[in-house]
Length: 224
Figure 1 (spheres, rainbow, N blue to C red):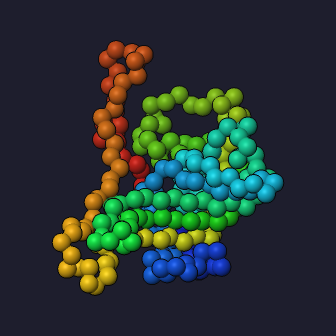
Figure 2 (spheres, rainbow, N blue to C red):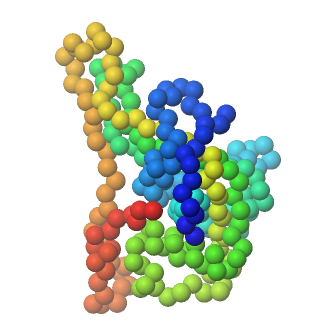
């Protein structure tokens, strides 16, 4: 399912940054690293002139972005029909505290990708994609689980969108104040923001004596 490496993205009318263009990144390494650091994206699309944005979990395999859900989902049924979409992923890394309200900001990493998703029809590809999703979200978990049933596969839709048009936007570093404001007696700097995973909590109906695997005890998202 992994494709050969491709060249960096070229800015398009939709991805070219007009405001703060220095924060733009068009190299695939940066785009993929931001995608691989997250697990929730927001999918934007239009139905009969009405815009919708749906949050959903996702995963990347090579140069393709995947997401899935119920076959009855309005979002999935709309997109599998060929409606264009915009997918965004973002991470907040810090609250940037300046010496004026105007110059307060956030440190962030974000990706915006445009394209048309397709329904994964081939059963083997679909199963492999879902297995990859489980491995992405829960490394080593597939080996512990029963295989999905034919009914479960039937009521699940998997969409795939080639990552052919994308841009990353990143802000790092301290605040940027007006030069005279640096002399003000006001604290300024960055409050770091992190996403952390806690200790596993047992299901109340868990059979006595079953412990979480070592992988779950030291859980972290798998990187692609």
